[in-house]
Length: 533
Image 1 (cartoon, rainbow, N blue to C red):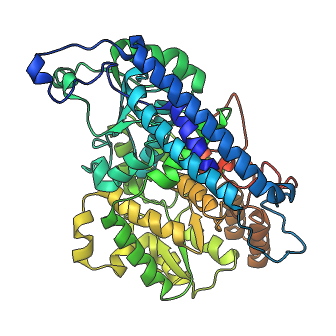
Image 2 (spheres, rainbow, N blue to C red):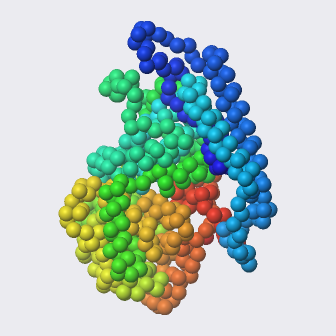
Image 3 (tube, one colour):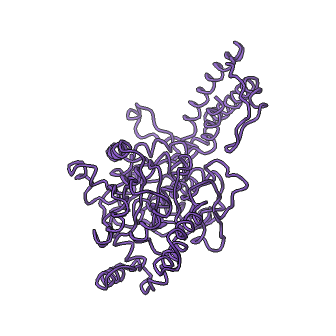
């Protein structure tokens, strides 16, 4: 009941409505012509109803708190264990039932709470109205768009605007034609957030002309902005324009320094509201079931794909023709701004994805045997089988979704890269170990999701250290045993355990990404854990 009170009080203070502020005419209004009603705030009867509902609600809260105070006092006085501590002794659980008087108070409070809520629903739509409509055009791959959607919902809640279901990127390198409801359960998305922000599937018809004329006010927010930017810069625009569109929505909200309610809402959207469609969920669960039937499995997010290599400029191990092909591709896409790249220097700095050959060495050094069941969560590996020979030799039990599912099962997902990535994402969440070879969007978002699910083991590879050790091993400067010991030591505290994000106020791109470690939504990490593990 206490939870119910909190939700209702929050509804009183923050309920969103897109109504114009006028009462709806009665069902028989056609008999009297188009009768215009005055605004509700000016009506004495509605002011009285608002006062009455508020009084009833307050008295209901008092009644419930009185009853619950007597019922829960022993538990509250008994204290509460932390996430990292367990009580030394556990007393037997004895059921405690409230006396009849308290049960009566609960029943009375339920009655008044329902009455008050009904009155509030009747009065508030005419008094509280939102500031306008927010349209969102996401950009990037699946997980880049996923994080952007979480941010945009949080911003919509902050600005008190109605959010239109986000549009997904169809013009990027992947050219995936999927809409929001092809990937995510749109009804769950809207319903699960109904107490936080109003979400609609499309703009009201009164804005049709704006849409047809493509005259909706559009802008790209400044990256890594805090709530003040949106309050001071974006909110006035929404109030003036009534509907605006935000594009380039990736990384437009700060990682740190935001109010706790905004951070918690980001998690709620990510881990509860953004649920994949039943079709994707069913096939993802089938993949996990097949893998589990064969024992434990490790998911390797081998980000050695053509788009990543072209974007990063990393050509180590590629032939001259392959390096030229990747460079040509980088120049062909204008949104990849960095064109001239020193591949070898970037590799030494740890800024390149590990090659399949380097990955094989690292997994062996970490102690994984050749019998390990290894699932590749990635698209087509650049260089095909030639680049996979060393990894395949070290780990013969390599599987992919194309090997575990029939062509008929995968056919609906062909040419839909985001839906394919969603399958890999589901398998990555459920794996015994998750190892990304590059800290891209999927690696970061999946890492954070695994933390939320109970700090599941995620190996955060230190690529700069790894490259230095790999080069020493190949040059004969260190032995295999020395290499293995050094790799294990370097990753001893990089297994996805609790820690706090690193914060660099003046360098947001270098600090830890919120979605890779949303510690505000998790159990508090132990004080003896370093913030920079």
